[in-house]
Image 1 (tube, rainbow, N blue to C red):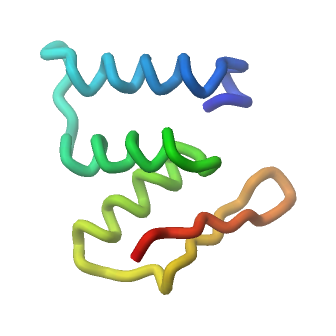
Image 2: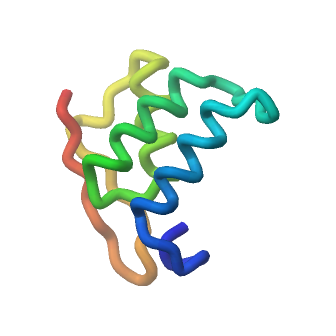
Length: 82
């Protein structure tokens, strides 16, 4: 989102917090969203990767401590706190 919308991460976090707290929006799973938002704020991962990680964890699955995601033409690793 940072690259697509050319916004600072802090602004994106505020916007996502607004979505989470607004009665105008119904989230599919507020717990997953909140967990992903926290992870997003604490890491250099994309929010979409954090959503996937939060969903995987809620399902009780593991990602062997790392998730690898595409970032342009290169890969990056998100170190998790299993």
